[in-house]
Image (tube, rainbow, N blue to C red; front, side):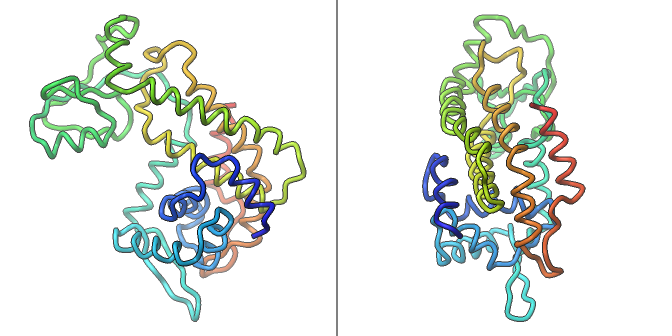
Length: 286
């Protein structure tokens, strides 16, 4: 990797160097999953080196992801390839909808009554928050976990001051607002970078940095109905900026993928049907 490429990407990241396992998850989600889920270890090491993550850290992180059932190793002669497991591919596919899918629309709410600690943890991991005691609430989005006592509600008044105050504190919207504002501030200068003559490699590293930081915030976003969010919600600017930058970097980034990155069958497809669909959807958000 060229030193200038690493610099262009690293200056945007919130934390540098990124943790190896998290960076690998970003690489597989953005590049590998939509192209069959398999990547040569040498290419993975090379991509990670562009972010200051050395080979030893990459190999250790890959071993841990294998032990967690996220990756499986395959050998072809002297080369090692790592594939997403079927379970991991399903998870990555759902995550892709979160990052690259249509903008969130208004929706109803799900209220769950749960007193079992293990089930409560499942609800919390699935985007619910506790309203106190055994009562949990979440925006009614796809794939929310449900228990035996869950019901949908459309009777809540999103304009109610007391309800908005409850949402603000329960979903920690002030903290999320700061994160989205900081993301937009860090990545707004990338618009200037887009106007310069980026190499294909530089474009890919910049796109990976963009996805890596956006992913970290988006996973914590409770995806509340837009009508229930505070006025001038900074997430709107961040989502649009992500879409603009991702679309602007993708032609050059995908060129690099198609010319340099490999699975057992050879070079990865630059723009398979799944990527075309992703770009069409994300461009509609601009």
